[in-house]
Image (tube, rainbow over all chains, first blue to last red; front, side, top):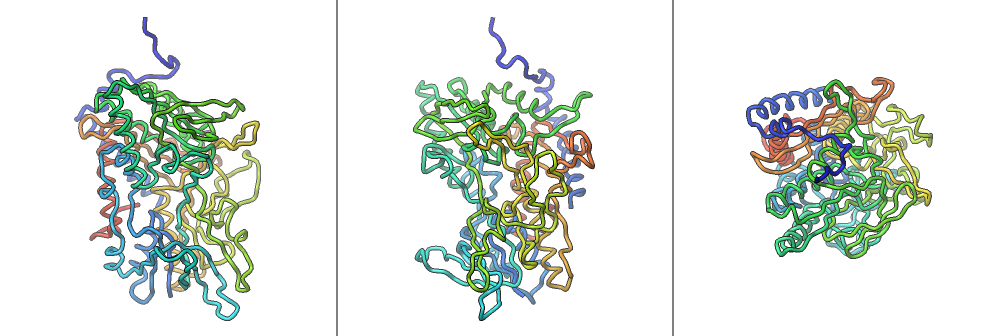
Amino acid sequence: MPRLDHPYVPRPTRFTVFLRTFLPWQLYRFVRINLKMLGIIRHSH
Amino acid sequence: MRVVILGSGVAGHTAAAFARKWLGDAHDVTVVSPRDHYNWIPSNIWVGVGLMRPEQVTFDLRPVYAKQGIEFVHGAAKELHPEGTAADATPYVLVAPHGAAPDVRERVTYDYLINATGPRLRFDKTPGLGPDGYTCSVCTEEHARHAAQALDAAVAKMRAGQRQRIVIGVGHGSATCQGAAFEYIVNVEFELRQRGVRHMADITWLTNEYELGDFGMGGMHFEVGGYVTPSSTFNASLFAERGIEWVTRAHPTRIEPGVVHYEQLDGSTHTLPFDFAMLLPPFTGVGLTAYDRHGADITAKLFQPNEFMKVDADYTAKPFEQWTAEDWPSTYQSPLFRNIFAAGIAFAPPHAISQPRSSPSGALIAPAPPRTGMPSAMIGRAVARSVVDLIHGAPAPTQEASMARMGAACVASAGANPFTGTAAAMTVFPIVPDYARYPGFGRDLKRTFGEIGLAGHWIKIILHHLFLYKARLRPGWSLIPE
């Protein structure tokens, strides 16, 4: 039976991998990440 | 008054642009730089995998400066004379003009000086390291172009049925910029998949980090699924998912054709064979020297032994346990000369952020603190504002931009494709952990986060165009945040 390399390292589930390129979810994340980054910029200046 | 800025990288260019904007025509702004073109370095990794040409990450600075009324001196600063001479107290810099004979020097006088000279790439610290040796680099657009050619050659061999060993990471135990090398390794892995040869490559990450995900910042912690999880977990997961092996706590001691020799923290020595390697060098300052009005050498008073400039930081040597966020500089003013500032990589950090560790042989194996990108630009802008206010009569620097009170947003590309690509989008606040304000993890966990996805790639593309637009000083440039 083939075994996993680095068995103690966490792996993403298939659903997590799917979400990474699922357009509706990524459009939402695009907005959220930009807002988070703008918050960091505002807080740092 | 004349403000002279040494360097035209992120910090120097930002400082020059804002100084020009805020000073008006009554004062002069001069940039001295050995490079007459601007390089948006974060996109060099895409040049290094052949997805962009060097021309897409660079542009000529001369017309931009001419349009803005910024004088440009094409040459490398060599000597600072902050007290002038015994006969004339006007401070000046001696510059080696580009293309002139080695002993020719041009005198550039100043009233205020901003040292933003960036790093010297010290490939010489490891024999065989760098484009003049046996490994590639992505530190400049030309290095990246060379890396892309070497990668293409490796891909051609894979297509011909030859398995290739790829090693990416750092070329010395004290190197920094692990973030750039990290981006490069995941982009190479993605590109090999895109080109249909991934199964023919063994890819290894070689790093001086104690744990993966350190990035010279002592790592980060993210709140995920009810746990506060270290960045090492995410980094290891990302590598394992992509079949990338890793070697941590390593100090490459020499490179021979096709072989990296390295030592680890436990004192063991190893070799790592490669067919293609991209290993980043350690940085030092550019080697400026300084002299008083009588010609006596005062370099050690202005600079640390690593050639970075001393500013308003606490450089007292003390054990790691006593390091605090307050050690870090806030105004970047030289303690010796109130009209000299340093910005970006050119200022000397008071100490590392990651805990320094040494091998039994005495080799320091720990990442140096990163000062690139967003913090460099923010420091450049803050220093420019302080200089402008000092010129207008302020008694002391008016702006503070401590990396211990500043956050950073970073988008690390993990594959360039508008529909299948991804990037790790991260924010960290503050950059330098402050355990007094944020006990435990040293950072604000509400403002420190990371996630990987296509949205990050879109942001990375937008930032590429946005920051090049800003750097070209096109209409509205100053409204785009650093």
